[in-house]
Length: 431
Image 1 (cartoon, one colour):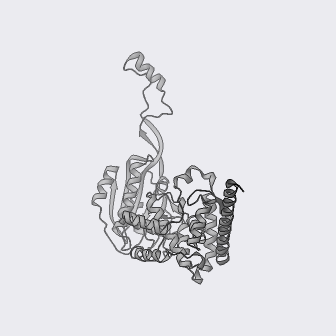
Image 2 (image 1 turned 90 degrees about the horizontal axis):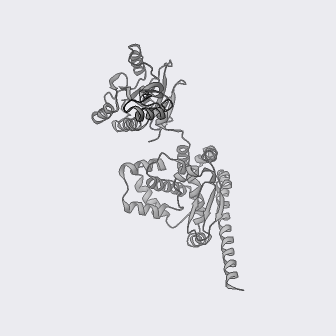
Image 3 (image 1 turned 45 degrees about the vertical axis):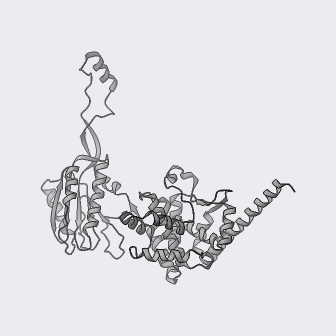
């Protein structure tokens, strides 16, 4: 037999053994955790020679067969661990979280979160030699992040940072697969199961997990993470755009301005254009709205400051807001303590530098709405479209719907908080 034929036979044998290892891993997971069967069936397997690792696009898990067999020989639990690790990334919707600006921090947070879940599941076939090192790091992280999830870890990393040594260590200890850049999911949606497909799988796992989590076996943290993945998150920019009104702005209206005649006039008669540019153009933008800040003891100053800074960043960078605005920022709990009127982005920025909360009493939402109604009666607003109320949700809601949209914005989803009225919109803002 020639050398080429021997090489082909060897490659074929490696491919077959690798395929059996992955099939065994799939069976091990399905037998122990039946609620994963749908996700496992959706995930295809494709061998890529000389790839040197593992990567998933949401539809297919690509793996190097020779690399897999080497890792399997060194770590008999590797294939099961790889399967769970990759699957959890998609069940938790990690690749689709485009709101996370620092991709490196987000990838590290995601790897730690899924590995923590796998450790808590205590699946015999998924154990690896690095488990103890993972536990030591996770226990250390719990001092700052008691409930381990990708979102909470990312938030801690963004605030406290990560040293280069820690980044290298976390990557070495927790990484299993090569993460695709999240931008690639926007560019090539036809190559993988859609975000909606994985949402359906995730919700099914969540529903089946309701009973499983009561039986222990790591179900508590798994349920917490998957619940976090299924939260409805809102783009705050999109929220503010609900308050758009039509108005005039000083600018050239490109739809009606004819540059040919205008240029011809300048060429023919010097400084005499045939058609003057239109000075105003109608556009739908946000002009006036109200922000109410709950100043009860549970809403600390740093949370409020971040919220206001986020609002300022959106207003100052978006083309969806008039340069001249009429924004009232109210500080309220059982009464309205402060009314800060903002007429421009310069005023908004100046306010941020010296902003300080007042109040800190028990919350009653009604005084803020009564105050806004008084402002409307005094013609302070010409066409108020909406109000955003930043709160923890604990307070007395008005019984009557106002004539404008109301959004109660929560930084965290507290299931014990009173239910918002049917006429209001509750959103949990991405931090």
